[in-house]
Image (cartoon, rainbow, N blue to C red; front, side, top):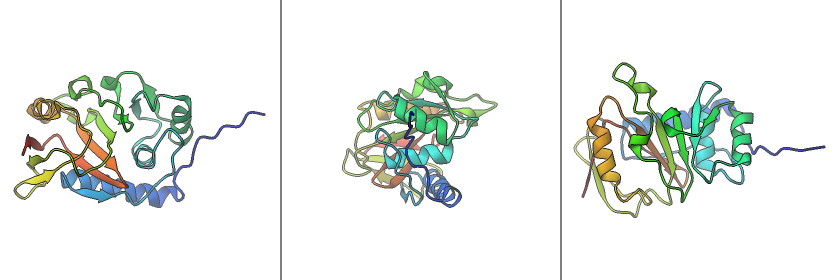
Length: 198
């Protein structure tokens, strides 16, 4: 008899998903701040806790997701299918959410679904597992949800991230949003934020 271990979902699906969703909302409403991911899932061997919690909270059977190479494996696809029913696509331009494992390259922002003028909310949200949310090169954020400026220093962003983000910001209200996860925390970078090197 075959057994399938699809990994653990939330211990309390309703409460944990609500807590995680609140963290994502707070992260995007307050760009550059770190929010605790209260609801957590142990995920699976190939899918870390933060990515698993994000996937469980934001995905359902109507969602299309793209997985970076380290996640594009049977164990993660089984987790996705069993717990959420979301469809896995091979092109980030067709995805509602793109999930990037620690160490994998983030897809270029321009390769993702950028939404349309009529439906900017249909763009891709990229969820990136980074080594840490502090300790990297300092960046400065300005824009809605930020009193004056907000300094951030996540580790593991692409070398040309600021240039890519500038092009993404120019498309507003179109463009992608970014969620960075590490150490049980999430940081939101909405498309409305301006990001420059410090």
